[in-house]
Image 1 (cartoon, rainbow over the protein chains, first blue to last red):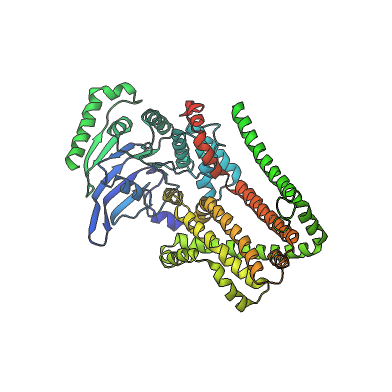
Image 2 (tube, helix red, strand yellow):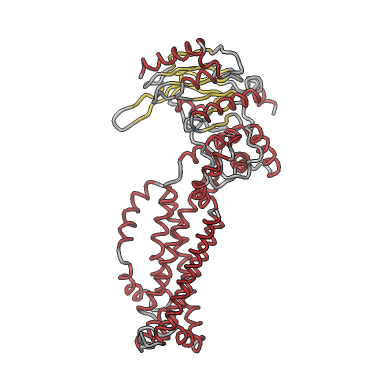
Length: 268
Length: 273
């Protein structure tokens, strides 16, 4: 055990939740040509921050997120999470929430939340207890026995978030999680997500198409350009928390949103 | 609500009434002399014919059941296995699918005489024929079921650290169950058809053989007794499949009910959005 400790220079606990993306590129090879999806992307996310990625369609923001999740390999560069490179999905370090709730329709809500624990052979009683805690956190106490088809779109995404949090990873990656929801539900879910984030202190990387959603949720907004995907701006959102609906019509909010929109219009 | 229930009840009662009416007609029409007994023997004489030769019919049923069960094991087991392989791997799919699809359009019964040459007129040729007959739809349905699995589900499973075998057991198989079951329903029904038809063509035992033999001596009552047995066999098979469907694919029927339940999901559960 002793030599192992010597080889690892970083204390993972101290860097838990930190994300470092260094010179990452992604090239898709097609039969006729190579398409550069991402070019020399570097960014750093400090633990506990809420970072939103925005950009026009095809800027590679989802691709970048999938690489952070270990679901896709970059062509060049490195990605480290909690101080260690991410080479494959690691549910201990990273939870992922997808656009469509992607819940297993044959399982109840609680069985869906328990799924990642069941994969690792966690005993039933412990699984159930953790799933109950996670469902309670997302405001779905008492809905555990329902199947996904018995839940509304917003509730499904809550289950999905609970599933992403159930192993208590320091990082939560969210790929346009509210894109399929109607506007009202989307607003409510945004507030809910901020509440959950504040309660858990996770690092969140959130991909969205909506500029309003981006500014409303984020500590930092990272703006990407269309193919090849590059980072063109990195804004700090200084609006106080908790965020309120009234801020949406304020000047500070409008200025930030305009700045992002100008970038996107330029590159689209 | 109560109007809905009573409408449902009356539809069910109506169905029963139709069946009872048909049974009554079966008894009454030949008795009244409106249909010659040669074309349609009355229900009672059919039952009596079956009862008096119960041993013979029992033996025939045992032979037919044995052939059906063995053929179903081959057809369903092989169909699910090969369908899973073809559905999940693109290379064999490109190779095999076009062949299987065109083979499915061929009336396979033309192969049956060949099977009797190869395997004799005993159970083996029936089993071989019925197995192939039921195998094709089972395999096609399984392949389709696996191909149409939502890739998001597999991606989500992967993000949670699922290994390849965990993805197979915990995602692919449960997600494919509804389509596989509908394949089994068609495949299993074709197995029964295959066994009975092959028994009627060239054979020395089984219900199909009895039907065919009594037909040549124009003993309609005994023919219809055999027909009744095949009917019960098919109804029994259907009941078994339905039972499996209820057990295994609750979520699928749930999805259908879920569409009607949408207002419940968005209305009554509003507080949690």
